[in-house]
Amino acid sequence: MAGADAPVPRCTCNVGNLATCSAVNEGAPTNRAMRSYRPHGSLARVLYDKQRADEQLEAYDKTQWYTVEKTKIREDLLRLWVPLGAGAQHDQPDKTAEVFLMKSIERSDSLPLQAWHSLARSALSWFISRTSINGLLGRGSMHVFSCEQFQKLMNVSGFSGPWHSLVDLGAGDGATTAHVANLFENVYATDISAPMRWALAKRKFTVLDVEKWHETGPYNVILCLNLLDRCDRPNTLLRHLKSCLAPGGRLVVALVLPFSPYVEVGERGDHKPSEYLPVKGNGLEGQIASIVDRVFAPLGLRCLVWSKLPYLCEGDLGQAYYFLDDVVFVLEAQPESSRYSASEWTDTGPTGQGAERGQATDGHVQQEYNTA
Ligand SMILES: C[S@@+](CC[C@H](N)C(=O)[O-])C[C@H]1O[C@@H](n2cnc3c(N)ncnc32)[C@H](O)[C@@H]1O
Image 1 (tube, rainbow, N blue to C red):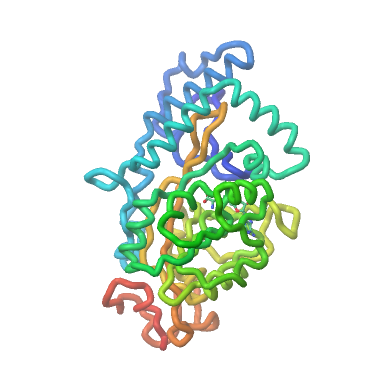
Image 2 (tube, rainbow, N blue to C red):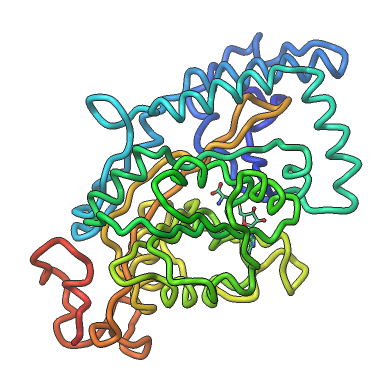
C-alpha cells in the first residue's frame, strides 16, 4: 500500500469522512518494481490492490490496537487504564475479535457478495444514508468489545450488579449489544436509522424511540458506543445519560480518537453537530484528559476506568477489514453535591479548592476535582 498508485486504506465504516485507518501504510514495502506494477483491467486492478492491502493488514503490528503511549498520558489517568488485549502481555486480539476478523476476511473475498453490495450501495446512496444502506444490506458490521472484555471493565470499575437493565444507544445492528445482552434481564436499544432499528428488533431487543428512551430508565448499564461523535446533540445526550443511570450504575462510552465528529442525520445539513463537545489536545493520548476533564467531569460523570481497543469494521473490495482506535471509558454519576460547576472551570482544570493536581489518594480523577 506504500505505492503512490495504491489506494490508501480508509475506514469507510458508516460515514464518508473518517480518518485514514491508523498507520496501516507505515512500514509497507517500498520496492519500486512492486510499486509501479499494476495489472490492466479494472477488476484485476481492484483485486490486485485488495491483495496488497490485505497483505499489509496481515503484517500490521496488532499490539498497537491495545497499547497506549504511556508517557503521553497524565499520571492520574494512567492509573485508571486497564489493558483489554489477550495473551501474556494483554496486547493481542481475543477470540471474539479473531472470529470477527476471519468472517470479515471471508466475506470481503466473496466476489459475488461484494459486487452486489457495491451495486446496491451506488443505487441506494441517492436516497438514504450510508448507515441505513448498511442496515438494509446487512453489511458493514462493527465490533467493539467481547463479553469477557466488557465483564473485565465492569469488574475493575467495581460494578457487580444488579443486572436488570441495559440500554445501548445508537446500537447500529446490535452486534456489540448481542455480546453482552445475556448478562442482563432486559435489553433496550435505540438507533436513528430505520433499517438498524429493524435489525435490533430482529435480535429481540426492545427498541426505544431516540427522543424518548430516557423516559424508560433508570438503567443499570448504559452503552453509548461511538455515538457522541455521530449524533447531532451530544451534550443533551450526555445529560440524559447521567440522569438515566440507576444508583451505582455504569455508563460505558466509546469514542474514536482523535475526535472527528460527523453527523449523518442532523439539523444543520452540513454533517456538523448542532452541539459542540470541547475536546482538545493532540492525538489519541492528548485528547483523553480533555474528554475526562472538559466533557465528562463538568456534567458530573466520573471516569472509573478506561481502555483502548480497535473499532473493527467489516471489509469490502478495498480491503478485508477496517479499524480505528477506540477509547472506552467507564463512568459513574457523581452526586450533585460533589460536583464542581462549569463556571469553576478554566482551561487548565477546575479552579475550586482542592482541585490542584497530585492530591489524588486512590487514583480516581474525582479525588482531584472534588470541590465539595
Ligand atoms: C458509528 S455507529 C455506532 C454503532 C455501534 N454503537 C457501534 O459502536 O458499533 C453510530 C450509530 O449511531 C446512530 N445514531 C446517530 N445519531 C443517533 C441518535 N441521535 N440516536 C440514536 N442513534 C443515533 C447511527 O444511525 C449509527 O448506527
